[in-house]
Image 1 (spheres, rainbow, N blue to C red):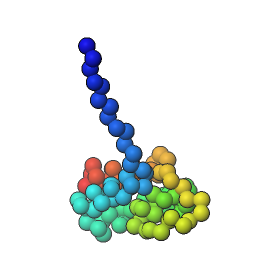
Image 2: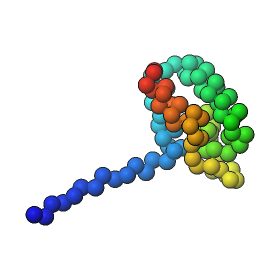
Image 3: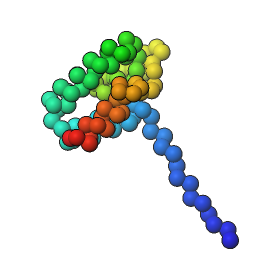
Image 4: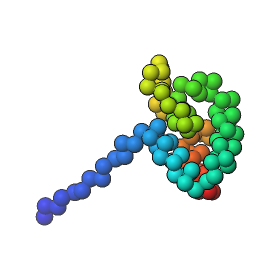
Length: 96
């Protein structure tokens, strides 16, 4: 018996793309002012724990900033633990 095994492609979505997608999804279900208020409180925690937060591309995606392509030493990953931007946005989707 010769069966074909279908391989499920792994997700190639970057952290930055995921943050952008989740941010758009949240804004479809939440008032912009409410989102900005929650985002600003979350960002304050990041600033306390990551003095180099501006080097993270996902931070710029969260705040709607662009132009990180020319930034030297940009970091293409999410913050860890309670500072995770992906987890923050996923949490807003669950509660929003």
